[in-house]
Image (cartoon, rainbow, N blue to C red):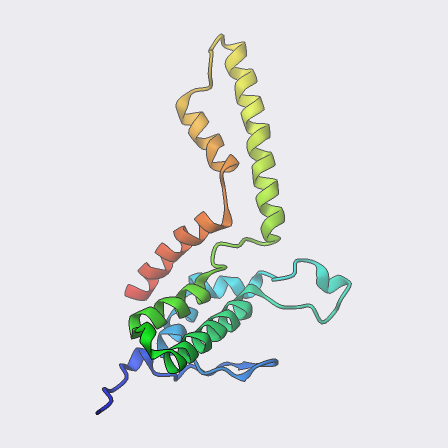
Length: 175
């Protein structure tokens, strides 16, 4: 059976060098995503927070962690396709897995999970202050616009931020 040609964006032409895995062969579409400003911002976000003050070698950033995660996901899908063709994994499936792995940390801010705790505590403080103001004004609840603003702090997650940044990334890729 003749094998169909591999579309350019699925060809493994992006080959970053990793200290653990060596040359990582990834589809060209990964480089398109990595080259966006939205993805590049992760170069400045440490994977391990301030651990590097205690362990000087712990300097991993979310940028390269995400590329490594994409590589491992890509290798897993390639292996599954080879070893279990009955699964019927398509190019689209493989691409979705690789890109999901690549973008899984997109919404992490600096200090990541600690930032989430900080934002939620800010939300609690703002809610208390808003409720006190409302009570002083004889209201039974805080105004809906203020409540909506406070709720954004109380419910903020890096996952939701990831979705927002993914939308930005799509805009960048289209331009």
